Image 1 (spheres, rainbow, N blue to C red):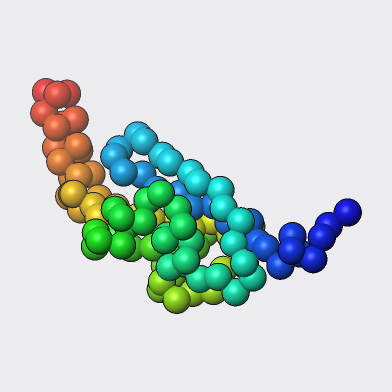
Image 2: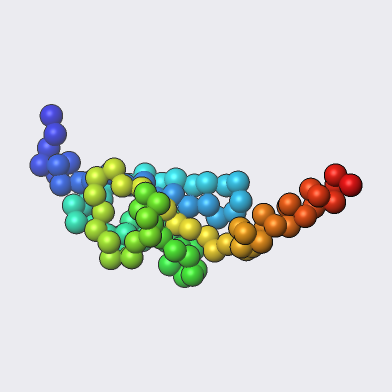
Length: 101
């Protein structure tokens, strides 16, 4: 049976990749009406997430720190890109052409 306290909680996952190939997920129970900022503060990645110029999203959509979360939301912390994806693709293509010759 679900108690009144459990009914007022939502399940949220906070996901971040601090380095390429490393993904960290923290599952949280938050009170109804909690926002992205609350999830970051409670999770263990808060010191790195709020201090860094990283962007935050919910299910792949950019959101502000004041965005109110719903049950089963996935908060994602995005690292800044080191290389523009278009430039990386061009460099790979040039290298492949050189390798073929």
